[in-house]
Length: 154
Image 1 (tube, one colour):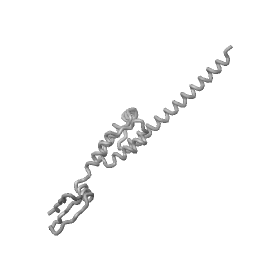
Image 2: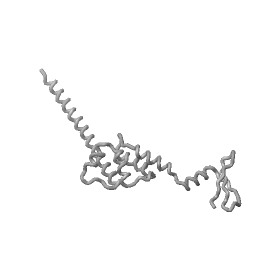
Image 3: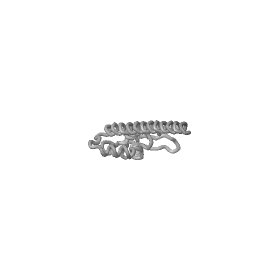
Image 4: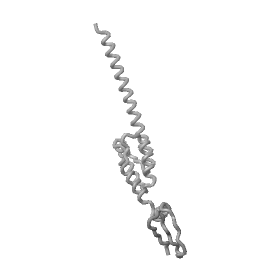
């Protein structure tokens, strides 16, 4: 026969009667909650992590930052395989997602998706910096040309 669990009025203790009915043992409420969680599982923690995973989006962060947060959220969400990949694709920025989907050999595992998305994001950010640098250089050259033309006016 399983032990019977009682609560005592006015106290924060839980009483447990042993199988044989021999004695009663008092345990703290935290211990009791731990026993319940161990016995019936921590499903709410998994639900919270799964919900966080579904809400996660890259937005203005780098892909490295997004991947790290995604890994933390995925750790105990019980998502795996194709479902995990789908959540990752849903959360990343649209331009990178399109480029990854349009390639001939799409990544297979979630780790491959992480690596390719990170590489694409890094390349995109570097090319943007290079364009800004070149744009600034062109503007400086135009400014210098205008000043030279002003000085040569009669």
